[in-house]
Length: 380
Image 1 (cartoon, rainbow, N blue to C red):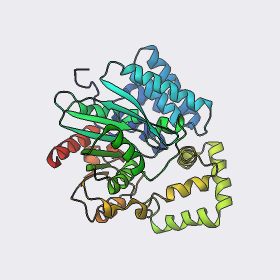
Image 2: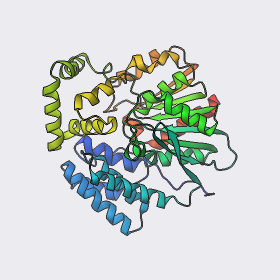
Image 3: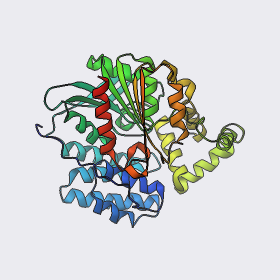
Image 4: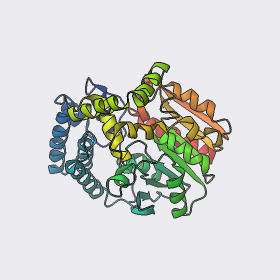
């Protein structure tokens, strides 16, 4: 494909739904350029439960597909899959429909789809050639449960500007877990090494998004071939960033009331009750654990001690939303203070005035990408 991306990053974080559990996701697909404002505004008025979400998103996907709006249709199926709380055939069907439509929509783009051998499976990857003369290489990945296809529009932003861009899914993400059974592993230097070895790279910029903001620092602590590291939202310490009362409650439920906690969470998942039900179900799914508390113990490993921020010696860019509803803002300063040996640290905090004040700058993706691009040029 010899022309620049057609993706447009609209500005604005909208109130498509009164509940944040739904509103953020509706804004997410719109902000990344994958859905129409009219579709999202309309569907937000018809959703009250996870079951509503699933059925309405499927209807929206089918309508978009019938109108040959393939990118829209693909991400409506992705949205439907996102809030299916149990691992079942329907969840995989939604994933397959998403994947098939997505790659059909971009089949004329100049990309490579790769399966990179890893343990007993593969790491799925997308490689996008630069438009014009190559000026560098950028590696991109998400976090907790993302698909690499979700970051295709930001990846195209950089390939349009002369970068070779490689996006991959690590253990616990996308097809890595759905097709190759690779459960979440917080030791992100392992997939990082495999990616760098496979493509024979020794000087890259590295972008981690969402919980990928934890993974990217862990990888950078062990991989000197990463020269510049960008965290779009950060994790730092899953428990340590909570206030003291939440920490005590979390430890109580995890250690002293383990059996009761398991029963309560499994009941919540069965009923499909709220954000906690979804988070627990997703965590069980990506960790391949059967018991909620076992899955939460995996998340407990995403802590400051295992992150090894003091070993990060690269140039660092941190992008944080002031009103991130997933990650407490205190994590921003904690992460900066922990990067004691970084070559340089640039930190950007986005407020409501920019519309990028939410998790991963949803609401103004274009602004965050512009900042990343300028920073990479300055540090290269």
